[in-house]
Length: 113
Ligand SMILES: [Zn+2]
Image 1 (cartoon, rainbow, N blue to C red):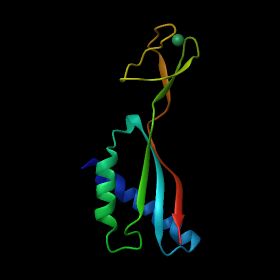
Image 2: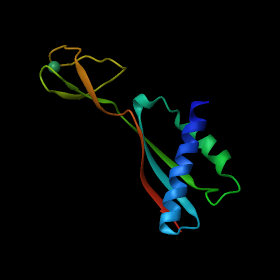
Image 3: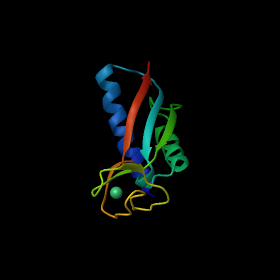
C-alpha cells in the first residue's frame, strides 16, 4: 500500500523533529497533501494510527488538508486551478501547462509536549 510507505517517512521526519525539540509527546500534526499526490487521507490516517501505536506518537491527531492542483500556462502566463485533471488553459486553450502546486505532501505544523 502506497500510504504505508508515506506514513513511514512521515513518522521518520516527525521523530527527527521531536528529538530536535526535546519533545516527549506528539499531540497533532497538520499536513498539506497535494491533490495530485494520489494519497488517500483516510488511508494515511489509518496507517499512521496503526504504525504509531505503542510509540511516543500514539494518539496524535493528523489534520489533513488537501491542496488543489494549480498550473501556469506557458503561453499566456495565466495561473489557474486545474480541475478534473484537465491540463488545458481556460484562457487560451493551450496544453503547455506547468504545475506549480498540489503534487506533494508537506508538514505545516506540529504540536508537541
Ligand atoms: Zn493560456
